[in-house]
Length: 451
Image 1 (cartoon, rainbow, N blue to C red):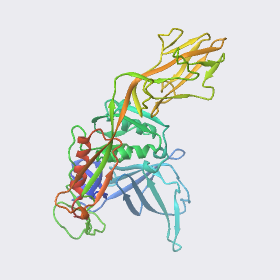
Image 2 (cartoon, rainbow, N blue to C red):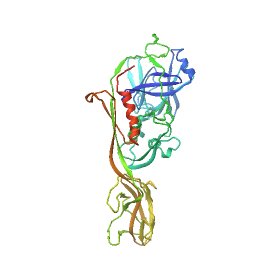
Image 3 (tube, rainbow, N blue to C red):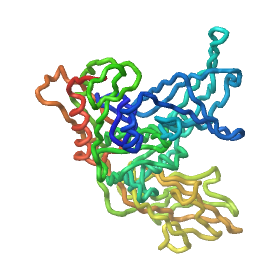
Image 4 (cartoon, rainbow, N blue to C red):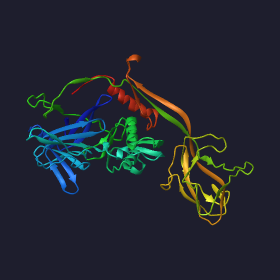
């Protein structure tokens, strides 16, 4: 653990060779108090819906953290009131204090699925173990979104959460509170649905060299040096494992053990790739050719009365230039097709009463897709309906291949380079990804001491 003026830190080291800190704000008076006493208190609070809050004072404490998750382990003296499996999945918090009266929250999470586990020692030595986990191990992070396309979203914007990728993914996990800064870059288009929501957030973290975890209040924490108003965090206080030994005035007397090791270089060359697209002007991106008549340039789709089209759900209208046949991976600004009985409409029909039920996300029945738009129609009339023209317009994106981006430390032979591949799915330009890669190489190119 490390201490910082006004902030309590739990620290770890992540791939790339840098310190990762989980920061908890605290008053300066508490920080000063740490130098006046060797008595520290930890309190565990279980939120039991039936019995209210249950406060526990553990006899042993452990904390494990990585670049994106935390877990806490506690040992409790059992005097017969605790049983195995108790409190499984309940919300829990950890608090820190110097006087057992005023408490400062360190952690918010849940009791592991195992609940209390029990260890029997001597007759008088009966203890139970309790593990708390943050939300990274919850069901929300494992959710897999439906296949869809997100176009024109800001990477992270706390002032406009409906157009923020980070907030959209947080909502998919069921997370309402986000601790973040504004990353004003706009991603033109991205498709999701192959991986989990948490994997999408991890891809954003990589592309922007960001901090991503659940903070002490249970909020999703997302901050990066590429956000507006970024301030580089400084770790001002370090842990001293021997309370009898005073190293200097910047060390806190916290019980523990400290081993000095040398972390090997983790990255001296970072690479990434970006898919490149040319945004074309609005044009036709779909034309139905079922029962096509070249002479009249008409199709023929017959829909029975009071029947949906297609009858088995929704239709995927694949993006393709009607004249040249060029296929497109994406199209943006898709125009909702007009429907009527004159040739001036995008979808022209005869007889019946053709209605648009859903189009490209207008209702939950349809979603934007990579390479296609979804639609659902219905003939509400009493006669057969015949569609003779069926077109969709939008702005297609022409694939131009991949752009390779690289940063390497100077004066290192090719055979001695340590490579790191960075996911560029959410990168927005060569210049933006160059900033990310430079930061990784700057941290990871040399060895450093780690306590």
